[in-house]
Image (cartoon, rainbow, N blue to C red; front, side, top):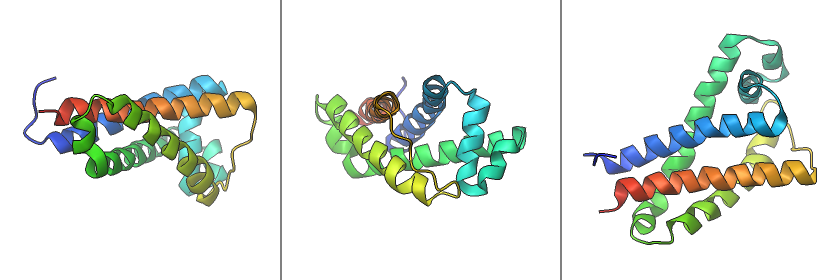
Length: 151
């Protein structure tokens, strides 16, 4: 990837958009629902259960919300530990560790406080699959942080 004049912004944008988009695909694979349904669930975080009966507008809102949250998550990582991550060969460990934090915050803080007020249903498969997806999410953010900020 070419060097950016604004590497911090580039790391946030690339990490957030890529991780956020792939997260929708992972959620679709894990749940068996189409990406459109997953996006309506995301929109349900602000609209409530009515979003599930909605159409393309609710799915589009879900995508915007997904990207906004992913960019925020990426920005927190890049701004707090970005330079440190870029300066070390252990960037994958930083990313996976951040994925652990993201998993617990999203599942046990954000989702219960959303308009859906959903606490994740526990099963071994769903826990492991969703946990692995968040490890990948954090790893992707760390990858772009390393690539954009390493100098």
